[in-house]
Length: 405
Image 1 (spheres, helix red, strand yellow):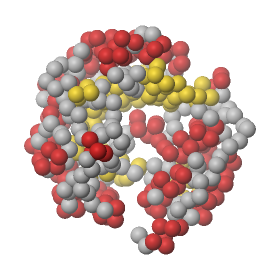
Image 2 (image 1 turned 90 degrees about the vertical axis):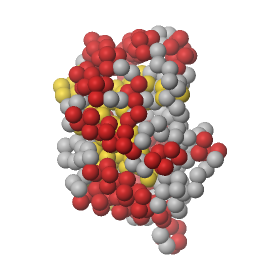
Image 3 (image 1 turned 120 degrees about the vertical axis):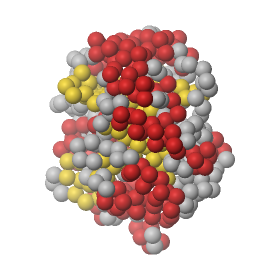
Image 4 (image 1 turned 180 degrees about the vertical axis):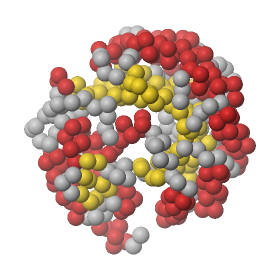
């Protein structure tokens, strides 16, 4: 991008401060997130709360018991609210047995009102599943799989520290279909160490050949506290990465996948409901080691964030007592507004203007000045009913979000 255009998107942060406190007339939809913190080995790019256990089996029964104890302590915060989506993530949830997942879901159903046709997603690693495991998961009630492929190139997989091969990845997707899964997401990364634009396109074409209903296509980022942060790999420059992403968007569209979020592409009717709830600033309760929650509390006109203790052994020891909560934070009005924008502006279609007041409890005028600046810089387009990011705003999302800080 020309330097002059880059200068135009440089933002002068606008400080948002107001005396008005949020007021909520309705509660947002509620999702449930369950975190499984173990992996066979830690990938060098991963900054999620995951702990390598090698060939050992996770303490499945004890952990499920802890999850239920954790949930029971949180029930007063969500009493009577139906669960609209359920996501079991990690870590590597597919390390748990089908019987364990069945037990977990049965106990959750006994304590929570599940909405009809509930979407239940489970993340799976191709190196930890077989056809029998997939069938057991489907019979337990899981109806959507998210399979962490990352690449179909064996050299790339080795550099990423993945435990599976490209052939195992293909076999996992086919076996999931044979086990009865109709909704399958593939996680695929680009901007990998040593990856060319041609290699990235080949990876994407391999994914398309398997005909999943959803593809999460995202750029490798170097996060703090990861091995790649301390030993950064060689990668393409920003313009090369943007070209890969743009070519991918057109290729995916040609195959019937609509981009609805920066990194998410879906066939019609197969958008990830759980992630959409995040991006539309819905509520979610998180249980498990290191799990996070965002909950609207109308009686106190506030939004609270909770984080559970991260280490699995510590979590197992504290799941039934208050010490399981490592962090609790009631968001200030300017934090609520910023978090709404951080999520909603990732969506290609943006958001309806009425959603801001509904989900934040604040009038849209609370962010009037940064919206005006963003529109003037060409980062958003808006009218009385709708606000959405432009292509420039999506490319320079961080600059756009700085306006709301």
